[in-house]
Length: 76
Image (cartoon, rainbow, N blue to C red):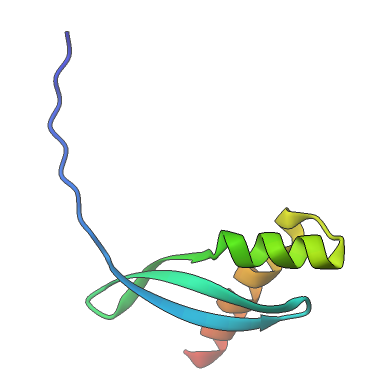
């Protein structure tokens, strides 16, 4: 039997919307001390857009994340 202890941090959550070539997608941000530590496109937004546009879900997801990252890079 192995037992291990684990600690967990809950990040502050915020939402941001990015405008992609397919339409607007919400991005969920995990933040700590004002810094973005995690960013993930909202699955339901990506799923809906993929179905409406007839494109792969992964393509919409990648476009949303790429748009968010390039926008954040240009703000620095």
